[in-house]
View 1 (cartoon, rainbow, N blue to C red):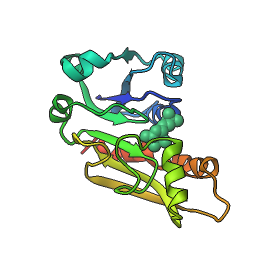
View 2: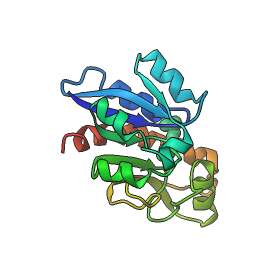
View 3: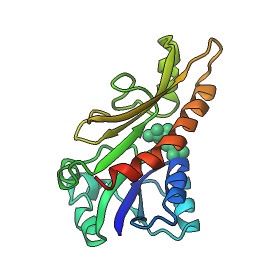
Length: 188
Ligand code: GRF
């Protein structure tokens, strides 16, 4: 079994879709949810699905071993960031080279980087009068939203678009593409 960890700190709607996708998968198992936020929605999803969770602390993540020994011990082979807002420390990136992917709710390289998350992304896209937005699935390196782009999917922006309506369109794309992309990427 190829064991995957999902890193998430939010509501966990993408995590839920990914867990669902791999529920009966013959070779891939979602075996851990890693979260830095007590009370995050994704923790309830993991509990409901009987998936073990690891609540991580800042100090150990950034200035300690970044939990690499724990992940290795659990035989984690691939990491999916799904709404994980902390930067991934170098030690973890190096250990899992080409094995960590993230999803970003806009068309990178625009509208990425530190502080560009959630509603702020959609506000910036609309303010810039973009004609389209979408999702970017990319490999993770030491710089926020910078790693090699793997897949993008787009949606149109209408004249009366709001951050809320755009967020919904983008979320549809995330749920449609992320689980299937992970299925391919995790086996490379
Ligand atoms: C998604 O929009 C994803 O693109 C971003 O964080 C959000 C997570 O949403 N990186 P959810 O917690 O999966 O619902």
